[in-house]
Image (cartoon, rainbow, N blue to C red):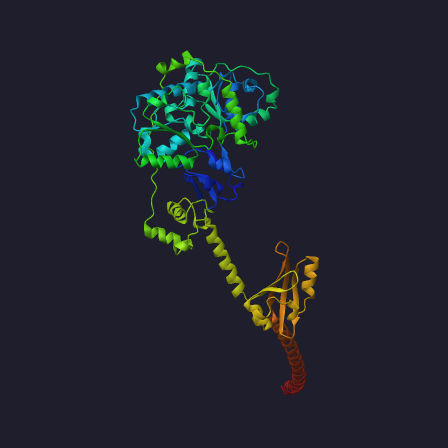
Length: 566
């Protein structure tokens, strides 16, 4: 099932999405972009950076509205980073807003995080794993499963806080209840449809989608009277969106065998995973967050230009005012429900081009030597070889190489300029010659080096050029004769406003003009010849008629005599 879609009409082919995509899961062919789900880790970075809003995400607000209309028990599980998403005078105003929209019960996902913390602590204390990798960030999980599958055994086999809370909610309020997770993460939409969690989370909304829904319903969230969450959550669970907090609670770090490290951002995640994959380190416990700034920097945060640190500060203040409480009934759930999760080797098999195939593709891109490989990243790939590999895989096209296309365009432009049968020259704002093509040299009998930098009046009158410059109105299809050069030219003079230059394109019609004169002469001669023939024919006809008349008279006389004799 696809969760993200490209709009062909909105996309301007800037390749920013491809540059942001570390897994290079975006295929662009025939100027149409699409996400290859097998390669995608659902980080949402492409969605975040797209300046044209050409990428859309499946929006389930209508599904939630339909469930409300059907009088289902609608339950909201809201991620603990919500204070960073909404400016509130009181955290309870988010509860009021959700209940005004039609939610029956509102709880914090941090309740599920408390369960996850219990399990994490258990795995750290047992110390049975060579290394440990946190598994609360679904995008990070996909990154490991698809691109570092040899590290799957290090992944803590526990569900995320969202799934843990969803299981608790279904258990508490009934399997027929409708659970909606609301948070800053796009990957949660993918995670909710995982076959291991089927039926746990019914819909996932981002904070951005919730914010728009609230606006559309004309709800002024800051004017609402605060309401309490339907169940209290502990401070420990609310720490989850703050980077470095996953292994921070109730773990005796001094007496455990692991060193702890927190990694944010995809590139850093890939670096630490490559380090782990090398096998050169042991006893490392890694908290992986794909988003820069952890959940507070998630792609599903409202696009209100809020500063990251202002979001962080709102979350920090909210957490600091919370207290550590023991939700005994929640902790009992660890013995009643299954919170374990199995991770799989989903290795991405990518065909690798052979050296010869790579060379051929690079040559087709105009890269004949290593110095030709600019590695400019304009196409979205870090290096020209990486770009060539993507062409080999059928993920992109050679024409996406902008320097190659520019070189090709410049080459074509030069060919046209050099070999055009038309006179082409450029004048600057002072009507001095800037460019002068070979045809111009031939027609005006002057070498370009002798005219470039000099006024055009040096060889022809400049009155029409001056008129175009002053009026900024193009002169089209003007016939101009230059007797001194023995030519007649069909002239177009164009004013290029942005470049502040005048472009002249002239077609030599001298032969046509001569042919016209010759045609007139031939017509006159033909007319005279035709008239002479007509006159001659008239004379002959008259002579013939005269002869015919005499002959007829003689014949009549003879036949009359013959009749009389008979």
